[in-house]
Amino acid sequence: MARVFVYGTLKKGQPNYKHMINTAKGLAKFQGRGHTVEKYPLVIAGKYNIPYMLNIPGTGHHIAGEIYSVDEQMLQFLDEFEGCPDMYQRTLMRIQVVEWEGKGGAAADGVLECFVYSTATFPPEWVGLPYYDSYDSSGKHGLSYVLRESR
Image (tube, rainbow, N blue to C red; front, side, top):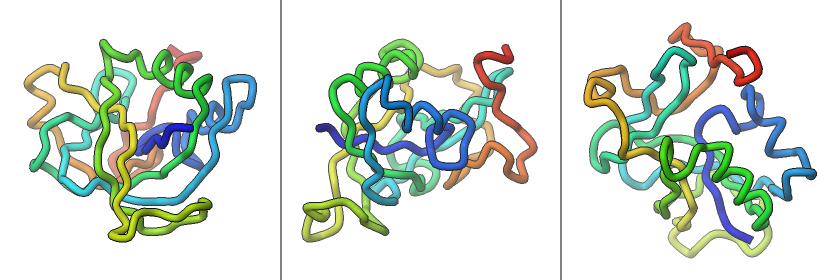
């Protein structure tokens, strides 16, 4: 099992959460909530209002999200779903645990290494977009995510 940190449309209550609980795509077990140890810019970009964590460590906010244990089948699905490695790149990041439900607890300091889908391949103007510390498709920003089936 691999640990994955999700911060956007795959979180509970968000438009693509259905994929995380679809066992035909593999297994994903919710473990807890956390935030990135380092700061990153989280922007909502493009005509479909997609959330992106820009891989610019030290800039932006500590990004809030959810930690899942996933099997190899789910990890492969997520790679495909996230357009990895072109749109997003899956990298290991340090995540500070703030709430834990999983077995075998977090590390003593509450920091875990998790796979995160962020991007280093983005248009330069995205750096000038507003930065968020938490994503909600129906947030005050007014930038509702457009589902793939609606594009």
